Length: 233
Image (cartoon, rainbow, N blue to C red; front, side):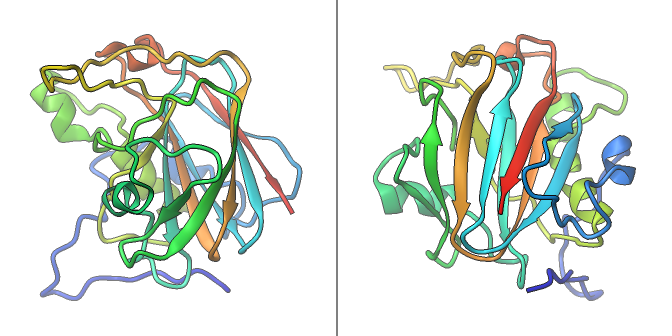
């Protein structure tokens, strides 16, 4: 099924416009996001990419340097208002971090993807919103800063799509433990170079990935790097 965009009417609130620009906007993997099976794609540091998956297809997302966080979204390709929802997934699997065999469910509580394989220690995040320009402004940045939220918007726009909101992503390899006093720590990844996850689509979907540009707190070691992925047909 071909993915379709939703454009807001004048009366609808919308959060689908990027607040700046980077090469994500002009560098899709293909005009419509369709992948070449078994081809290794690279997402440059601080950038994002979108790819179409048919039900049953598997995407392998590789933490090439081991130190990089990858914000990851799954949208129903026939209706981008339905997407993998971390708050719904946590309730569905009774966990705050999915493990192999667990499903990601949508905001309509339907399975959209299944985590099949994880070669890393399994430390990921489902609690933290995608970084955005407002986050960096709050951290004292006065000029435009690349962000995962904008990467998601631009990656979709680059293949002719537009989402009205930026959902909470699955933050692959992000190490933000909740401490005994309920505070959160912002720590480097515990994965190693070449660790990967394999995720199977349970619906026709659009997968969006952002090589997180966070360079202030040390979740990427303060040095964003590339992520790679491959789609198995």
